[in-house]
Image (cartoon, rainbow, N blue to C red):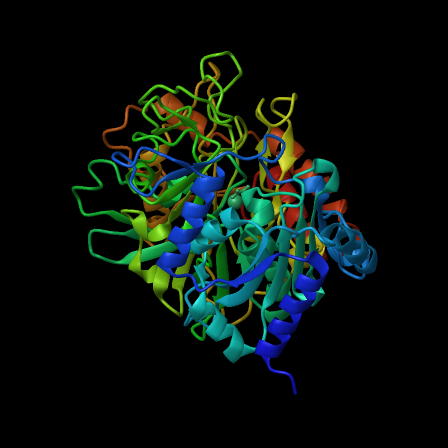
Length: 588
Ligand code: OXD
Ligand code: MN
């Protein structure tokens, strides 16, 4: 019988035969190894030292300008049966896909080092955690994986004990967009990524493993791998409720996960605990509740827009031991980005004069990589093997009209419909069309490793007689008034909405039933100290039945686009809400 170590060794040997590196290095995850890698990258220019007086242990990486984001059209989910990937994924037959990408891997590591990176997604001792090994020829990837995962010796020991791990093979190749693929083979627990060094394409533990492969594993094993932040809300009595929340990109997920309670909440003893800002694995516990872990150990956050005003906790953790990618720098080599609100950029993300009219100084998708433990609101429960119990799931989108600030699903099935119909309006940055509604179910559109129809059926299946499922809410921080300005102040003030959710959970708020869900009753949302008049409050919660009927019709068409795999139960729920709107009766 071959042991896991044999199969890991065999795979490393086979890969080395294919890619022909000059050296093979097994990563132990130690501090010394990290510093050696950093020094090597400082020497070859992969990293640039930032100001070590103001930002000790901080470095800058500049990507190839054609390799700065995820590439959805080159990201494939290769199930043997195309239907299993669904219309939500790009697909290729697995044999054809392996042949195509292996041809690129051939000899690609000549002159380079092959790094073997064992990692654990989640606390090493957690039954919910899962392990993987990434083989890469990028020292930048190794350094980032050490921050983003539990990487090294302990992970390798768990892999040897456990026998199963996800295999990820990555090479930056030539960074040629014409020779680039990010391929997933969920049945084989395998990822192959070639031609990109960008985070989501190259740090294979993150989107590739923890979402695409894990969502498929979760489907067959009865748990959920979700694109959600996890945050703990402590009330003045010291009780902590945890919520998990999914938002499409550019909706402030990292900010919400690190929110600082405004006054008078802080003085009154409210506190926020950050468990995760991007990914959440949830599994039903013996008590019927969903228990969640953050499989990651760090944050790979978007820099632009992060400031002492929008996210003071993020700024506090970025003062040391962080890797910045594609930000600008000041004359004295401090990191800088649009929206930082302090300092002046001297060099842009490509190292050019920042004031020579080349557009934003920092790339709009510039990032920081930093250990979660550096976050002032970091929760010690992040290390709990059993995870944290989830009291509420929140779905959100960026909608300038139609959608109220907050409403609650009447039950789990309705909640799944809210998640499945999540949408955001496009901003100018994403396309040339502004205000087009894009559906992004559970914020998983680019990350679900199987057919969305089966995924929704999986979500619905958690509703069992003995389950104690979280309440489900929908929020929209982005509703605008007739004058085009935001109706809700957002950021720290979102605490008020979280408090109402907690009151609903503990039975202290009645809410008002409407055809689309439950909204706060008069006086239930604490607005003390906010400059918000009655007219604005009404506009925030206005429900336009005709516009909602149109929305429900659109949702129906969207669900139909998934064909026969779409569960009837979800269609029936969409029809129920349509009827409730027709009849003006929330109980329909
Ligand atoms: C991310 C994303 O980078 O969702 O987290 O795109
Ligand atoms: Mn994300």
